[in-house]
Image (cartoon, rainbow, N blue to C red; front, top):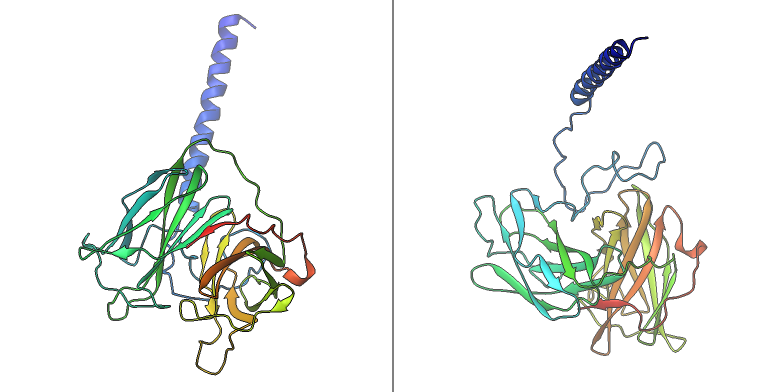
Length: 320
């Protein structure tokens, strides 16, 4: 075939190919148009994945907490989006309503108006903080993050407005410095911290409520005189690996109501929104000091059946 004819034929074929692709693309656009996101219901239980898959989407009754910066007319305004690793920095933020006004009235839950969680993207570093609020609605607290990299900030609160529900809003935070990625700790059912050993019994189940029992001991003896912390003998936060979805975990009973005792066992009820790997962070108080035990669990597998070496004492990067 003549060179000019070959080029003309190739151009025609190429044009036809792109024309077909454009047509397919336009068709796909109309088919996969996203529906409006489901409204978040506080502490809602997720429906199980009918397909048994381990993806994170498609089978929840509502989005897991912390995945959105705005929800139900409220927005997390993080005024300090960047800090320097290893340097103490004032972290500042506000919760704004639909009119852009800083919220100044909150319901107290677990003894606080707002709970602030800061976690690294690899879920190795964890902070449970309680900032102070100024009269103009600005929240602030000094933080010092040990490693460079990406972090997620979670604000857990309930506005003091009739009918308002609990919300957890999330925003990204960057810590500048030399970054070295860390591997997530292997699944474990025991954790050692500050001379204490905490054993986890039970597990997370996708779409189904399950009980998590944590037993605290020191020097081989059960700790039977835990002190109340945030209205309970322990406070548990669960974060999903990958997108850092925040789970609301409920303590079973409150100190003084006759249903709970000050150790050695602390009980919680939790529902995993999907299968996958989660990090659990338990805060408990003893002899006037708060300690944090950390676990890695896989939803759908009992932690009593999966055991890895306990975390070395003092290696956890956590704080209050």
